[in-house]
Image (cartoon, rainbow, N blue to C red; front, side, top):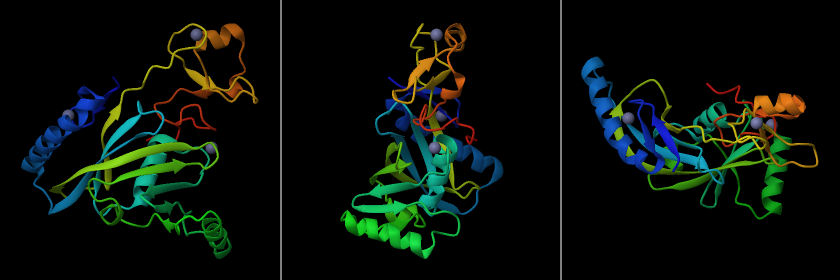
Length: 243
Ligand SMILES: [Zn+2]
Ligand SMILES: [Zn+2]
Ligand SMILES: [Zn+2]
C-alpha cells in the first residue's frame, strides 16, 4: 500500500488512511493556529484528492479555497508535478472541458482553431480555466486532467468535502503527498536514480542507478532524474519547477 506524509503534523500514513487522518489533523491544526494567532473571517475550503490516472501511487491531498480557480489548481499541479516545456493542459468535468490559456489568452486565430477542432470532433465547447472551484467542482465532483496532449500525463481527482477555516494567505495548499514509490534499477535492483528511453525507437522508460550507468557507460543525455511525480521519465520532465 502506498504511503504518504501529512504536511500538517509530519506523520506518515497509508494512502487509504490519509483522508480520515486529515479530517482530524486539519481541524486540530486550525484550532491551534486560531488560538495562537486569531483567525480571519471564515472562508469556505474544499478538500481535494488528486492522483495519477495510471500511476495512483502518486497522489496529493489539497486544501483549496472554494473561490480558487481551475487556473490556480493547474498552476499548482504544474509547479509540483508536471511542468516541463509549457505544454497545453485541460480539466474535464463531466462533459465540460476547461483548457489552459497562456497569460493574456490565445489570439483570435488560435481561438478559432480550437473552436474548429471542438466542432470537428463533436466536443462540447471548451471554456478557459478562469472559473472557480465552487462553480464547477462542488463537493462530490470527480474530474480528470491532462497535461501535454502529446506525451500526456493524465490525472484524476475528486472533491471530497467542504469546510470553513479562518482566511489565510494561500489559495491552495498541500495537505499530504505520497512518499516516493521505489523504482528499482533494471540492472541490479537497487533504487534507480535515472529513467529514460534506451534509444529513440524504444520509448519505454528504463530505470538505472548511478553505479550501473557508470559501469555500462550509458549515455546520460537520454536519461531523466527520478522525481516524485506521475510525469517521471516523460518528455523533458526534471522536477526543476517543483517548489
Ligand atoms: Zn497530520
Ligand atoms: Zn515537455
Ligand atoms: Zn543498478
